[in-house]
Every structure is written in structure tokens, then in C-alpha cells.
Image (cartoon, rainbow, N blue to C red; front, side, top):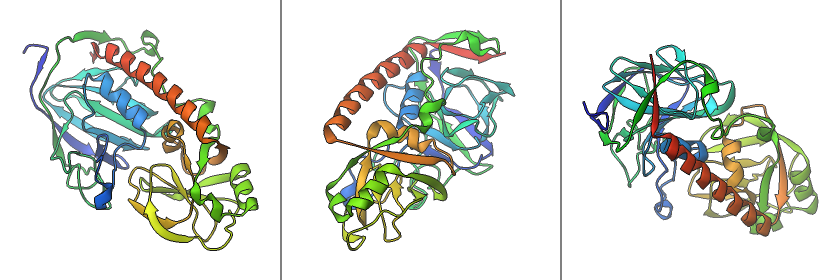
Length: 340
């Protein structure tokens, strides 16, 4: 086989992990029809994974939650692990994240409970081969669409990896040490995980009292067990409304912070509804959403209110740095490692 030509491979799910779904960048452009976007919770880790395996456009990958699946490869594929540190393994050998690896017939991909972060991504050259709905393979489990039968993976499932061509692939031996690798792409871990989440107040902030807004921007909130891909419900000091928490339903975006009548905020996430009828005090800025998506239940969250102008400058800087890291990941994709 020419190393640059890879035939369609199959992946068998031996154990599903805690909650593993197929995601790509999401269903863009269909919210006006009531279709949720879905897509990755941590888009930064997802995009870095796509670049590491040499995909020129965002394709289907696995989003693993807390515990990754155990997979058996049937054929040959190239994989990379990004996001939360679940100590990914190939044939029981722990391999570093942010490095592409080649897997052959019978190789087993697995890992352990996350040591830092909540969501790890497994990217494949060529992408996961499942039917697209509205131009996306992203799973939305509440609507039961996309991915593998609209649900999280189960033991016994089998899905394909598309055939692909790589114009340049250099296969290198992996000697079992992380010291060989440049860690510039690592984006999970360290004290930055617990820095404040920056928020821009919205038009509906006028529905909250001055005390309520001050409480929101100065108190600590705890991420409760009532959190999933649709929304993160927080617990903490009550955010006071002037009157009612109800509004005429309007659009919801990733990071919108709804405050229902009980005064506890809910941050809308990747599987959010397209519209919502609770007052939204503000929105978490784009640069902080990947970090928010990796916070575990029980973590404390502090919101830092910033201006629109500050948010725009942060966004420009963030996107500039992210593009540089994606370019670096594409350069890394030329050097694929194999576990002996």
C-alpha cells in the first residue's frame, strides 16, 4: 500500500466510554428553521485535532466525556487526541495528545478517566463516515439526529473512516516518552482553567436590578450536576430581576446566560435551543467558551463583566493566536508516529 493512499477503515466500539458522540463543526445556517447547531463543545480542541490529522476542512470526530471509548481499528487510520487529558492509549501504551498516530488492523484505542478537563476529541484523517443531515454529521441527542443514529455510541456499534489521500506522510517510531514533542499546542490544564469567565452584558440586562447585576459580576457560582451539552445550570447567590424573568422568546447563542425566576444562571452550550423565553443577562465571550466547556461539576465560576470593545479586541487576539496554532498543527500533521 502506498503510504499516501488510505482505504476506508472501520472502527468497532468495544466500550462506549461515559458519553461519546460524533461531532463536526455543527449545522450552520438552520436555526431560523428551529434546527439546533450542535457541534463541538470545545471548538478549539476540535479544530486543532482536525489540523493535526491533516484534514483541510472540519470533518466528523469523536467527542469523549470524562471517560473515552475503547475502539478496535479494522484497517488503517491516522488519529490524534486533543482536549481533556484522558491518558489516551494505543495498544495499552499511553500516548501524548496533540500528536498524530497511525493505527493498523487490530490496534486498540482507549484511555482512562480524565485527569484535567472534561472533553477529549479523537480526530481521524478523512473524518467519520456517517450520513450528513443539513450538511453536518454532528449528533444532537435530544432531537435524535446526526452522528450514529442520533445517539451517543454504544458497545457493538461500528462506523467507518473515509478513505483519504495524504500527499506527504513521514512515519516515525514512538519511543514512549513525551519529552520528544513540542507542547506548544497543549491547551488544557493550568491555573487559566479557573480564571474568570468574561461576559458582555446584553440588551436584556435592563430587566435586572443594579443589585442583581452587581451580584452576577462579583459572586462565585457552582457548576451543578444539571449540566449537559444543552446548558450548564449554576448555583449561587440569586440574581435579582426588576420584575419577571419571562420575555417573548428570542434567539439564543452559544454562551448566552439565561436567568429564570429562581435567579440562578444557566449558560447555553453547543446543543442549546434556537430560541429562549428567559431573560438573558449577558453572553460569555467566544475566547472563553472552550475553557468553560472543560470545567467539571462542582467547579466555582466567577464572571467578569467587560465592554463590547474589550470583547472585540480579545476576540481578534484570540483568533489570531488560534490560527497560528492551527498552522503549527498542520505542520505537525506531516509527522505521524506509530506505536511499536
